[in-house]
Length: 476
Image (tube, rainbow, N blue to C red):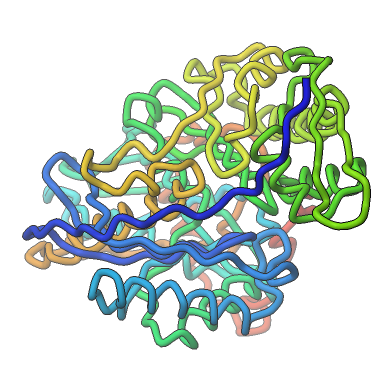
């Protein structure tokens, strides 16, 4: 049996935008292969209704593993999506939320301690957010920046292991955080492209977190689950347990790598290789018909080319197997491999690979699901329900939550005194479960005060701040 290759064509875009009173936000997702711009509005129930959407393919060589290489091409692609939305929906986008990431980042544990001046008052959300914002200001290596801060647990006086201290009262408040630190250049290049396209950057969000927000429910985050976002240039892994981000890692392989393997192994043109992967590619050789052959009409004087489905599946399976092995290795490093009853959740453009669920289940022995963005209204455009839109939808959700939080301005913060240790706040670089030190609060406070009693000279203070600040990199 033979099948003829038909290159995919773009479909019509739904131009209907329903009116409403909800808060409207816009988001731009700069991926390895394309730029996606969404405009959405919040609705009752915590979902988002997408009012307008546009995507623009990036020329080959514009990006390398989620990092901008050719800023002009990326800028122009963003501008084209904005013009498309302006023309078809009459929406003029000015401010956007953007995803931040890169081809490298690492995880560190970091504590912070506070002494509250009035211990009988309730801890406010303002205080909690203030502590979190302070973690973004911690010193890092030259050329790096803090991409995301994930609270792990809090301690109020002698009560440890508290997921959220808001509403409690106490004199001493401390917290343990997970810091995700990456290269600064990819973030700056993406932001430059946004500004050059005439946009104002409202806020950036760590892309793996945005993706997880779009595809996971609160119940899944609580029981324990790993999100695997298979993009064009990279594959990101995020581990949730007890509704907390515990770990994240990046793997330098994605859908583009599979396309390159097909191009190299089958001797076809790159544009044909990608179409073959999308229409006929399977990552599980045991499930394809060994008697089926793909016939490629070259549309010139050259002879038609024939590729056995089993041969094609073998090429794809080898690369997908490598990606899944890397995913499982990273999950093992997280320390939560045995605490994920929610299993593996695959999303992203690469997750649409035929038989991925069956292959990943057989390979890992875990529960596996392929998911699309779930927090969308039923009247949102069908196009944005694709796995490749997960990050963009997550950015919209984040933008709505941020806008709503900004409206709350009547909270009066409790006066606090920040304890700044003379030793580095980052205790160690790990790929394991966060463990809170089991000392009493009184001992912790006495020790901290003792350290700050003697005033140090500037050279001593600088030396203490940077001495052995970072250990060996995570090596992702």
